[in-house]
Image (cartoon, rainbow, N blue to C red; front, top):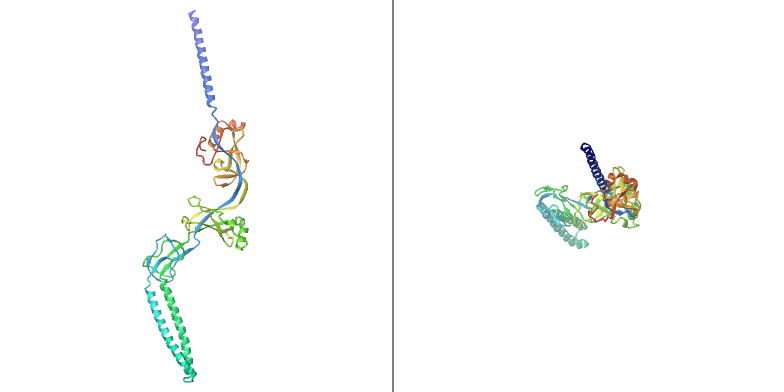
Length: 405
């Protein structure tokens, strides 16, 4: 009988073990099911905004001063002194260079002596005319003698005038040995050194007016035609150029926006036949001389208005190769991926040309969370989208509960 009990006990033990194992497996499955259902992601959302937006165009621009004065001497001479510091501001009339004046001082003294001789001769002839005029009237001397006196007097008057003109020219040559700045501006590095022989073809330095400064850029003929009526009215004196005032923005070479706005002040005569563009100059205030001639940047000008444009933050746009998507939140707080078409960027925002309506909510922060959740549970996208916890987004908000994209 004991032999029959052993198999029964063994079967009972095995049954108990099987039940325990089944319970463990069931508990483990429940745990897995609990882990497979994570909480909905938390995202920051904003509404699609509709407003009128200026249409702008951006062009590569090069800076230059309205006036760039090349400093060349008017006389030849040896350079004695440089009276300004390279790269510093100079004022109109400020002394820049001094040439050796001795040869011109000597020439002036020589010419002055010629003037003195001519004036002395003229004085003698004046006396002759004064003496002979009454004598000729009394027939005490021949009339021919008086005629000669008058002719000599007239010729000597011309000689005195010529001598005085030569004196003025000599004075100018002497004065030109000192070279002054013709404008206010920044004086470049001198190309002539002390002791150099310089002349009328020697470019000693360049001074550039920098306040204001001009930015030159080329626009297409089509873009020019948008402002052509105002330009024509201005140059014919029929209207002022108010529409072209303060419409230009400048971005510096370091991608930093320049703090002053500029005005269109010059448009070239003709459209280039080779490029189909026309050169325009915008004038910008430059009191701190931050912008310098020769520098490159970008000019942005408004060419029209996009009425009723739909705007979303640039951070909300998902780029997929050459296509774009927005994550739109439904009224049931579900996130859906929607293909859209994008237009121009406007500051931190982006114009949506097709795919959304005003007032719809789009995800700005938490995009990656939604993407990961959708990848882990693709069946949710077939049932209305990924459930999310949507909170309002503010432009100045730093990384919050939703995290970064």
